Image 1: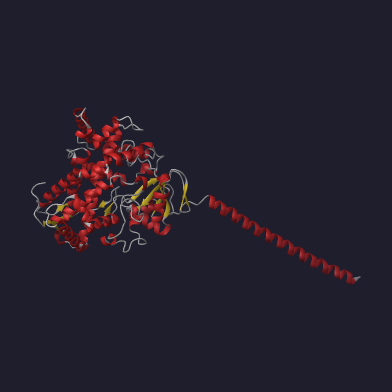
Image 2: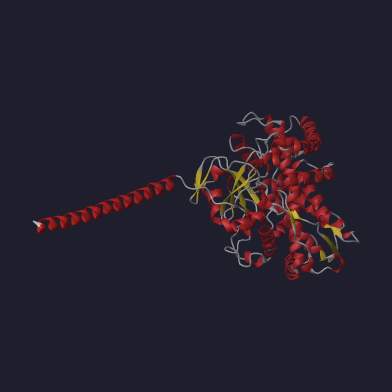
Length: 523
């Protein structure tokens, strides 16, 4: 009997051990199943709903403003991208910015998904200064913008018009050369380039040099400065009181009034001219850009009617870009040449040899100046006129595995991409030779090189601007030897930037010019 009881107890213990082991096995199996199931669910969820891009830590209210404080934005964004990657989300105030800093992200935004990123953010400056965003730069993506783009490429800045205006650029650059030749002291090259560029675009756009030139150049600088800033009113759109407290609206309305006086005067002169030419064949009349805009305004074929505000907004785009961008590129090119005397010497030698004793340059001569064109390309690589290309996401989408929500503002950091050592050998050095024999161009097809943007929103004035830059630089190299004032050495030249929508030198370039060959006495 005792043996039976003992055996029963042993059996019970063994049975309990088996039961406990079985229970533990079931629990472990269940937990493993749940872990695998949850992981699969979450991985599917992540696949269906990608994460937003990473970004720097934020503070309440101001977001990431403290990361940009005291720095030029495109430099600050490149520094942050080294930590957070080529696509990052940066909140400034209440507004999210997706910042793209690599060739791959730029291609995805500006080419692969270009229609979804073809919108522009609505800014206070666009609404006030650019006549309710009715220009090419700020107008929303849609029928009106598409119409304006077509008008720019097919009417206002078509290749035929640019070629036919070559004599204007040749004359204005020679006026510049003659003006410089009379100087006995160091010249302020920026101021002379601004006047030359403004005169050239004015003669093409409005038919003559503008009597408002000096006023326009001053106001244009103000516009460039406000376009490049992160306005408090734009960063905190729901806080309307900031428009008043910051003084932004007052300043912008003051700029608008000054521009109105200039543009209204130009339009009135053209309306008078149009009445005088009424009934004459278009071919008989020398038509400038404002004439073309007024003619198009009166044509019923347009899908979206042109308004007078729209005409003034397009005029402002033309005059502003033609004045500021061209002069800034030439000033940067001359700055780089002053820092690199051997490159300057090589460029001057090419110009002299190609011209074969001629004492003046025509635009047709530029075709043979390959090294000079490489200098311009390299200048635009290091100093793109627009360093941060602005876009806006129209519909929520995925970019390289990250979710970009509708309404997110996008900045393509062209300045950072153009200097990325992954794509460029000795990326920070000025080396025009890197472009010799290469097919890299300005048309937005090379996403490691974005001096004028890419896609639907690429700058429509590129061809005209480059014509002015190439000719002006060739003239400056042909007619003069150049020195820095006060015995300054090349490496001592300050190359710091100031930030606006066009990136210019922080200090104006002042140089001593010594004539190399006789200056033509007539233009």
